Amino acid sequence: MLRAERAPVANAGNSAPRDQGEDFVVETAEQRSARHRTLFEAITGGRRDALFADDLARLMVQRYEDFENMDEVVSELMQSIGAPSVDAGVDFATFSGYLSNIETALRSSFASLDKNRDGRVDIDEFRVGLEALDLGIKEHQIKLLFNTLDLDSDGFISAQDWLGGIPFIPNFGASRSPLEAAYLFFIEDMDVTPEGDIKETLHGMGYFAAGGLAGVVSRTATAPFDRLKVFLIAQSGAPPKAASSGAGVASAETNTIAGALRYLWKQGGIRSFFVGNGLNVIKVVPESAMKFGSFEAAKRFFCTLEGVNDPSELSRASTFFAGGIGGMISQFTIYPIDTLKFRIQCGVPASGPNKSAHIVKNTITQMWAEGGPRLFYRGIFVGVTGIFPFAALDLGTFSAMKRALLNSKAHSLGVDPSEVELGNMTVLSMGALSGSVGAAAVYPINLLRTRLQAQGTAAHPYRYTGFKDVFVKTVNRDGVRGLYRGLGPNLAKVAPAVSISYLVYENTKRLLNLE
Image (cartoon, rainbow, N blue to C red; front, side, top):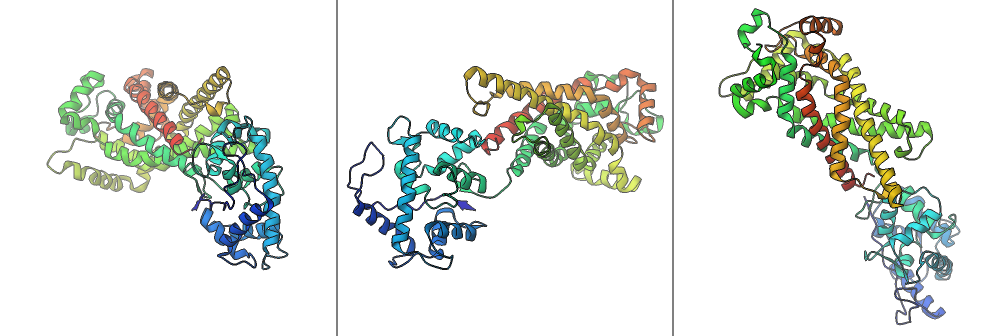
C-alpha cells in the first residue's frame, strides 16, 4: 500500500520575509541555491557529486511506500530532471536548474489558484481551479486530491505545501499545469483514500462489503415478518390426511394472520418467530453483497456501452436492467440456502433439548435422501427469472428517485448534485416505496417459487411436477386470491427491511468513500 507522506522541502534561508501570510519565501539566488543543495543532499544521503535513480527510488518509497510501476516513474523523473540515461547520474547544477524551472511554474499556478490573495488555497479555490481544466473530476476526488496536497493537514494548501507536493511527480512537463499533473498522478494513476493512502484497488469490492453489512442489519431486524410470511404461504387449505397427522398445522384458524401468530407463539414463544433466522444471517451476506455489488458492476458495464463516465448519467432503462441482473446473480448465489431455510421453517417443529443443534443437519440429510443435490435447486428457474422484475423495480426505482431528488435539491441550492446528501428519513422512505412496488409486482411468482421449494413438508405436504402444476393447483385450491396469500406480512416485512438495507448501504458507501 502506498502512503502519501511527503518528505518536506528543505527551507534554507527561512529568515527571509514572506509576501503574504504563508506565501512563497522571497529569497535571493544564493538562498535558493542553498535550499536546493540541502534538498539534493537529503535525497542523495549526503553525497555532493550526483543524484542517481536509486536515490529517487528511495525518495518515492519514503513518500508513497512501494508501488507497482515505481521503476517507470523513477525513469520518467530522471529523464525530466536531465539525466542522459536511467543509469547516469545528475549533478547538482542540473538538479537545481530543474527545480528552478518547476518552482517558477508552481509559483504561477499557485497565484492563479489563490483568488483572494491570502497566501493559501482553500477547498473552494481548489475546486474552481480543477473545474477550469474540464477533467470530469468528481467531488470526492477533489477532496482526496486536496487532502493529499495539504501536507500539514491544516485545511489549506500553503505555498510550501505546493512546493513540497508536486515537484517529484512524473509527466509534469506533459501537463497543461502543475494541478493537472497532480490530478493525473494521484487520481488517474493511483487511488487516494481519505486518510491519504494510495492504493491500486477496485472500489467495486467496497460495494459488496457495504451490501453485505446492509443485508445483515435489515434481515435480523425483520426476521419475525419473514417467518410469518413463509408460514402463511405454506398454508393452503386442508392438507392431505397423511401429512396432517404429523403436523396438525393447516387449519382454518392458521390461515389468518392472527391465527398464524397465535399458532407460532404456542410453538415456542418469541423464539418461534426466529426459526430459520440463523440461516437467514448466513445467506444474507452473500445475497445482499452480490445484489448491490453486481448492480454497481452492471451499471459500470452499461456506462461503457452507453459511452458515459458516471452511473448517474446512465439511462433509466439500463439502470433498471442492471438492477435485474444484480437480483438474478444474488438469487442464484444463495438459492440452495434459501431452499434449506424454507424446508426448516415449514417442517414439523422439533422437540427435545438439542432441537436447535440438529434441525439443520437433519433437514439437509432428509433433503439429500429425498432428491440429492437437485432438490436444493428445485424451482431455481422460476426463482432466478422471477427475481429479475423485483430487483429491477426495487433497485431501479430507488436509483431513479435518488437521482431525481439529488438533481432537484442541487438545482435549488445552486450546487453540483455530487455535493448534495439525502437525509436518512428520505432514504428510508425511498427504500420502503421501491421495495414495496417491486415486492407487490412479483409476489405471485415468489409465492409459487416458495411452494415449489417447500413441497412435501409438514406445513405444505402437496407435491408438484413443475411451475405450471403448482400454478394450476394453487388457483384451483385457493382461487386467484390465493396467489397473494401472505402479501400483507410480506409488505410489512419488505418496507422496513428494504428501508433499513438502503439506509445502511448508502451510509456505508459514504463512509467507504465509494461515491
